[in-house]
Length: 290
Image 1 (cartoon, rainbow, N blue to C red):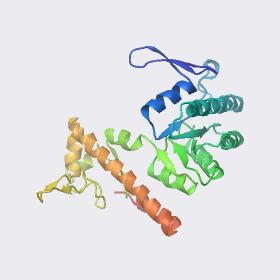
Image 2 (tube, one colour):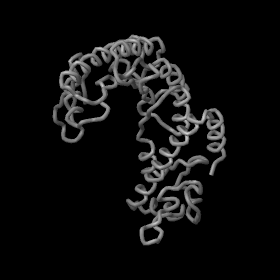
Image 3 (cartoon, rainbow, N blue to C red):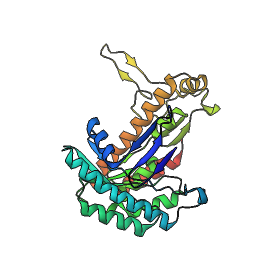
């Protein structure tokens, strides 16, 4: 479906098979047209498992990771030059690569810092590697990036990953997990995860999370004084079992609310100087279970 060269990426559309091409320059032009507040350099996300035909299924070697990382650095410079040529007033972030090799990560971040991007991302994690490997790289890289610029961890992750990332010096996250998991009936709560497809919820008339203030859990007061929203586990289980679209919509609202509220609490703890205490309570609450 795709071929990566120094020039860029040739690939086929998964929708209709059209032949398409993406280069650092094309990427910057698209992101300028979109007026993205934060534009990202074009990079190759180094996989955990090699995609080379002769070594498919093998862990990516250091030479493979180095080759990919060094090309991403060249693409970073091309992205920066095109971004400036376009006079894009927004922010362009460089992306640290290097696979699971800390010395390659160090080389990548030093070269990117030398280019003086407005912000920096840590890429190439949560790409199939064991969790302990992800946490090792997550702990290694962010605090080595400039503290006065945003540090962004790409594609991560669970509530525990977010709190661990903050402890490692991460400022920003993105992940499809809140909505993807919701569509598959998995919910995050203060006291652990819920599998809404489990039969035990069939007759449970309690809320998803009694401490949650989202529309799905608590509802809202309408201008006329009447309540709207607030749904039981039993009803949400029923919607999921029936394949009713309202189900994943409500579960997505809950998960997004949970993530946003978690990060609000993290920021408040950081401001108050109580993050270590918050982290301990967060872990204890999540381990308690629902």
